[in-house]
Length: 413
Image 1 (cartoon, helix red, strand yellow):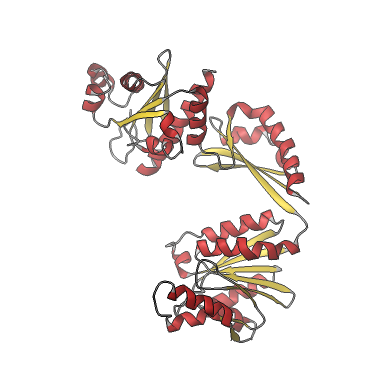
Image 2: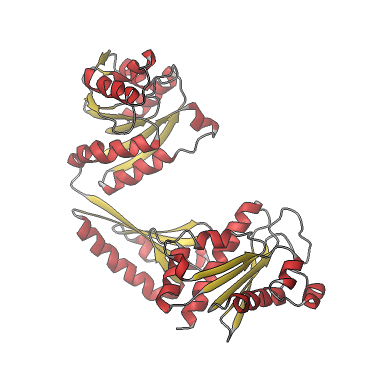
């Protein structure tokens, strides 16, 4: 079965809303072994919606439409679908009872316009909405399957998991399982060269990707069961890790803050952080992990030179000679915070987040990251693209800091 996702909404075309629904549906279709060949978007215009429907149904067997099912005048998706097939909308009492219940549970009268949501094209099967008011529909017509769902992500997810996934499973005897391997400190081009021969495999497929500036590898296997697909993926993963395992740090939903937290917990070690250019972002990431209080004791934002000197004990002469953004200062920040708090590890970071403050010698994006355990101190110099916005430079700096901390802890084993 070939599928297309058609998302309705002028706000998507204007860039006011990010189209996350298309990504979600494609991901879920792949898990069912259904190939999604196209994504399309149409604004809130009946003629353009019908044109998009016609284009889609000329090239796919399954069309999934999201958006435009609300009570307002620009919610015209159901009418556009009915008009395309030259059929009428039919009122359904059961979904309307749920709409009434939704409003009355909130002590509100049912708006007259809410009733339009209970109308579906004649012959369509109602898909009930457990978290909102607009029902969806499934329509088998002219040897095609058309699924219409709300555009509100939470409603879409609930209806997909509650009804659509089970319904569509009849159309495929296969499942597609994916695994993402995450790497650090290896250029994307070098990673691609290492797995070049594996990328020629038709099943599982292997592809290099980049996420948050770091290279990943996606392995996807198509099989008749998830267990069979996992076994196929394991074989490829082992081959990859045999070649470039020293750069590997996690998979799928792993985050660097979780990996570092688990390493600290396993070693029963503690960490303190002194942040300058990242302004507390590293601390925020670390404390996103449940149980972090066992290894995070005190983190500080030492933005000014005075706090670096007076709180961390950074030598004022070093700042005078080398500047606040320098290797010697990052070194003393890491050592100073560790001594101040009495933790096993200390991390200090200083840099130029921009967009102002850079020079030829020290451009925007220059960052120094110091890490100390009392016996050894390592400082890393990183140059992040100066064209990046300030927020992204802070994010990349934080990711680098935690990755270098992971490497530092690992080398201690």
